Length: 137
Image (tube, rainbow, N blue to C red; front, side, top):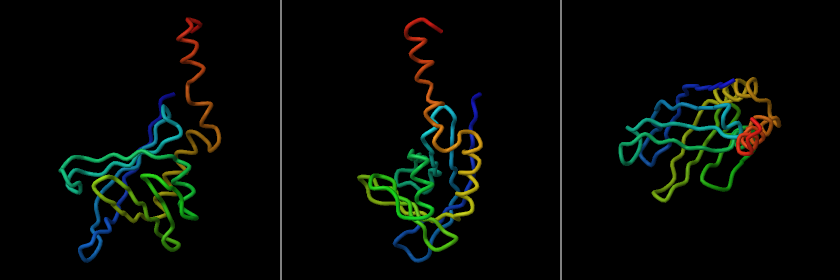
Protein backbone atom coordinates (compact mmCIF):
# COMPACT_ATOMS: atom_id res chain seq x y z
CA UNK A 1 0.00 0.00 0.00
CA UNK A 2 1.60 3.22 -1.18
CA UNK A 3 -0.18 5.99 0.75
CA UNK A 4 0.65 9.65 0.44
CA UNK A 5 -0.92 12.43 2.49
CA UNK A 6 -0.67 16.02 1.34
CA UNK A 7 -2.33 18.84 3.22
CA UNK A 8 -2.33 22.42 2.06
CA UNK A 9 -1.86 24.87 4.91
CA UNK A 10 -1.64 28.62 5.16
CA UNK A 11 1.44 29.80 6.97
CA UNK A 12 2.28 33.29 8.07
CA UNK A 13 5.84 34.15 7.22
CA UNK A 14 7.29 36.05 10.15
CA UNK A 15 9.68 38.62 8.68
CA UNK A 16 11.54 41.69 9.83
CA UNK A 17 9.19 43.82 7.70
CA UNK A 18 6.00 44.93 9.45
CA UNK A 19 3.20 42.38 9.54
CA UNK A 20 3.33 38.67 8.76
CA UNK A 21 2.70 37.58 5.17
CA UNK A 22 0.28 34.70 4.47
CA UNK A 23 1.67 32.17 1.99
CA UNK A 24 0.58 28.70 0.89
CA UNK A 25 2.56 25.66 1.99
CA UNK A 26 2.00 21.91 1.88
CA UNK A 27 2.66 19.29 4.54
CA UNK A 28 3.52 15.86 3.06
CA UNK A 29 3.55 12.39 4.61
CA UNK A 30 4.45 9.29 2.61
CA UNK A 31 4.24 5.68 3.74
CA UNK A 32 7.57 4.95 2.03
CA UNK A 33 9.27 7.26 4.56
CA UNK A 34 7.14 6.72 7.69
CA UNK A 35 9.36 8.63 10.12
CA UNK A 36 9.46 11.85 8.12
CA UNK A 37 7.25 14.79 7.25
CA UNK A 38 8.04 17.24 4.51
CA UNK A 39 6.93 20.85 4.21
CA UNK A 40 7.01 22.54 0.82
CA UNK A 41 7.06 26.28 0.23
CA UNK A 42 6.42 28.04 -3.10
CA UNK A 43 9.27 29.66 -5.04
CA UNK A 44 7.97 33.19 -4.50
CA UNK A 45 8.95 33.16 -0.84
CA UNK A 46 12.49 31.79 -1.24
CA UNK A 47 15.55 33.99 -1.59
CA UNK A 48 16.56 32.43 -4.91
CA UNK A 49 13.09 31.94 -6.43
CA UNK A 50 13.15 28.13 -6.17
CA UNK A 51 10.58 25.99 -4.36
CA UNK A 52 11.87 24.90 -0.95
CA UNK A 53 11.25 21.55 0.75
CA UNK A 54 12.19 20.76 4.34
CA UNK A 55 12.19 17.22 5.80
CA UNK A 56 11.98 16.54 9.50
CA UNK A 57 10.74 13.91 11.95
CA UNK A 58 7.00 13.47 12.33
CA UNK A 59 7.64 13.04 16.05
CA UNK A 60 9.27 16.50 16.15
CA UNK A 61 6.14 18.07 14.69
CA UNK A 62 3.93 16.28 17.23
CA UNK A 63 6.14 17.19 20.20
CA UNK A 64 6.29 20.83 19.13
CA UNK A 65 2.54 21.22 19.52
CA UNK A 66 2.81 21.07 23.32
CA UNK A 67 6.37 22.20 24.10
CA UNK A 68 9.47 23.48 22.28
CA UNK A 69 11.09 20.70 20.24
CA UNK A 70 14.15 20.41 18.05
CA UNK A 71 17.74 21.56 18.24
CA UNK A 72 18.81 21.24 14.63
CA UNK A 73 17.68 22.79 11.38
CA UNK A 74 13.96 22.54 12.22
CA UNK A 75 12.41 23.67 15.49
CA UNK A 76 8.75 23.68 16.50
CA UNK A 77 6.99 25.30 19.44
CA UNK A 78 3.50 26.28 20.53
CA UNK A 79 2.52 29.93 20.33
CA UNK A 80 -0.59 30.18 22.45
CA UNK A 81 -3.44 27.70 22.21
CA UNK A 82 -4.16 28.18 18.49
CA UNK A 83 -0.81 28.72 16.77
CA UNK A 84 2.37 26.74 16.20
CA UNK A 85 5.67 28.33 15.21
CA UNK A 86 8.22 26.53 13.05
CA UNK A 87 11.78 27.74 12.56
CA UNK A 88 13.89 26.60 9.62
CA UNK A 89 17.62 27.20 10.09
CA UNK A 90 19.92 27.37 7.05
CA UNK A 91 23.29 28.93 6.23
CA UNK A 92 21.42 31.88 4.68
CA UNK A 93 19.51 32.59 7.90
CA UNK A 94 16.38 31.60 9.75
CA UNK A 95 12.85 31.48 8.37
CA UNK A 96 10.00 31.48 10.85
CA UNK A 97 6.43 30.57 10.01
CA UNK A 98 3.28 30.40 12.08
CA UNK A 99 0.55 27.81 11.42
CA UNK A 100 -2.88 27.11 12.82
CA UNK A 101 -2.39 24.33 15.36
CA UNK A 102 -5.69 22.77 14.27
CA UNK A 103 -4.27 22.28 10.74
CA UNK A 104 -1.16 20.58 12.13
CA UNK A 105 -3.23 18.32 14.40
CA UNK A 106 -5.49 17.37 11.48
CA UNK A 107 -2.46 16.50 9.35
CA UNK A 108 -0.92 14.39 12.12
CA UNK A 109 -4.23 12.59 12.73
CA UNK A 110 -4.39 11.70 9.03
CA UNK A 111 -0.80 10.45 9.07
CA UNK A 112 -1.43 8.33 12.21
CA UNK A 113 -4.35 6.68 10.40
CA UNK A 114 -1.82 5.44 7.83
CA UNK A 115 1.00 4.60 10.28
CA UNK A 116 0.26 4.83 14.01
CA UNK A 117 2.88 6.51 16.22
CA UNK A 118 5.46 3.94 17.30
CA UNK A 119 4.68 1.58 14.39
CA UNK A 120 6.97 3.29 11.88
CA UNK A 121 9.70 0.59 11.98
CA UNK A 122 7.23 -1.98 10.67
CA UNK A 123 6.89 0.14 7.53
CA UNK A 124 10.55 0.86 6.85
CA UNK A 125 10.90 -2.08 4.48
CA UNK A 126 14.24 -3.22 5.91
CA UNK A 127 13.23 -6.88 5.91
CA UNK A 128 11.95 -6.65 2.33
CA UNK A 129 15.18 -4.99 1.21
CA UNK A 130 17.31 -7.65 2.88
CA UNK A 131 15.20 -10.40 1.32
CA UNK A 132 15.70 -8.87 -2.11
CA UNK A 133 19.41 -8.48 -1.50
CA UNK A 134 19.83 -12.13 -0.56
CA UNK A 135 17.46 -13.42 -3.26
CA UNK A 136 14.77 -14.68 -0.89
CA UNK A 137 12.05 -12.45 -2.32
